[in-house]
Image: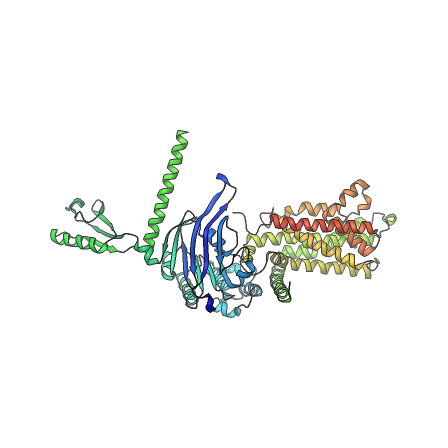
Amino acid sequence: MRDADRHETAIEARGLWRRYGPPGPGGFDAVRGLDFTVARGELFALLGTNGAGKTSTVELLEGLDRPSRGTVRVLGHDPATERAKVRPRIGIMLQEGGFPGDLTVAETLRMWAGLTTDPRPQGEALDLVRLTARASVRVKQLSGGEKRRLDLAMALLGRPEVLFLDEPTTGMDAEGRRDTWRVVRELTARGTTVLLTTHYLEEAEELADRLAIMRAGRIVAAGTPQEVTASRPSRIRFTLPAHVPPARLPLAVPAAADGHRVEVRTDRLQEALTDLLLWAREEDVELAGLDARSASLEEAFLEITQRDRDAADDAAAAEEHAEVSA
Amino acid sequence: MNTATLTATLTRLGALGRAELTLLLRNRSAVFTSLLMPVFFVVITRTSMSGVDLEETGTSANGAVMTGGIGIVLILVVYTNLVSAYVARREELLLKRLRTGEPTDAEILGGTALPSVLIALLQCLVLLAAGVAALNVGAPARADLLLLGVLLGCVMLTGLAAATSAVTRSPESAQITVMPLMLVSLAASGLMIPLEIFPDPVADVCRLLPLTSVMELVRFGWLGGGSAGEVLRALGLAVVWTVLSVFAVRRWFRWEPRR
């Protein structure tokens, strides 16, 4: 990394929109006004359910398409109009495929090396992703996880400064996932900037310096994994004995009960738990299956996407209602 | 373009061409189309033309067969092969992947076309050698025109193949989408039937077809004949069709499957 580049912005998106299809109701806005930056050396994760606009966004950042509105800068250049300036400095792992099935692993890598300025030795790239033993196998005979490894090897071949990984571990077994995480961590340790999309929240929690959760083309939560989870309520769960109705719980504990199973959601886990436990000792109540935990990224994510589903259901219901009244 | 970027371009074309050649040789139907079909069609043409009296048009039957053979090679090896190749590479998402790398769009299309074009050029050389050495056709009257015709034909048909791939949804349906241009060219561009045997108004319309101009350049180049005006007209038409095909590619070519 050059000194002047340190602490600079690697990726910048400003007011980004991407529209498919014609203007009006026939078209669809997959990306609706995104703003974010990724600093050099940072690992930034984009999360969201299927259809939230992650891949549509990543393709704009990669320069595969131009935004319908807004600007993208990667290493200071427009990745779509200044492809030749950006491409030699970035590596891209697409969400799926892009291999002719009839080439072997080694032939595929050799082709890509011929397309890359100053490539890594091909053996080194294969070693990195532990695919050396499969070098002479046709790509169509590889497993899904092995194809993802080959994909990663190709993305790494040009020693990129910025690496785009679109669902890099989908289809991998647990070991493959760990291997990939190790490779990604080694890269970020050496200053590579990484933009990652993933379905696995554990993966984002493990790797990301910062993350953003997308919903319907917009970013609805962003920050470090700790910041995103800290804004979510913690949870206490327990079951009351049959002779204790939930109404007897102390008022300070905001509980929702389903029969005798009680769930408490609170931003102040310690206070709520203290109140609850003191009450239980005073009243001599046994809280069966007591479980208290801070919000995980998964819970934060589910809450946000659940909100999304509720909103979608409301919209569908409203539409149905409108049709009926029309 | 300076030397460094030219070297980089050639390296990338080489890498793409090598991979594509490997794929072509591993694809039985592509090998069949590239190597056996041209021979088959040239033999048929030879048989059919032996019954046609061309003496009064000043063209020997062998000359018509050999120059027609060049057209057959171009349409089968360059056009037909490349439509399937572009569609197959698009559907397996290779084209999209290549665009994530350093090659330009033109390099991707050119590199993919390279093996088919080289095989076609080799077959044209074989036809030329056979015509001169064994069939008494004579050496090319104007080798420059012959070469120019063949090269323009390669570029034009590569462009038309890329354009045709845009309306072809799968490698299998390529067998159908190549038919219009292939059949029209075989029948009406002087590949298998000399234009001279058509009534003049029909022949004039046929002269406007894409491959006819290429065929005229090839005939003038190898067999001679053709006034300066005729040569210029053929050259102009060939350039117009080539430019149109490049425009069509820029406008309609699809780099990704429809979703």
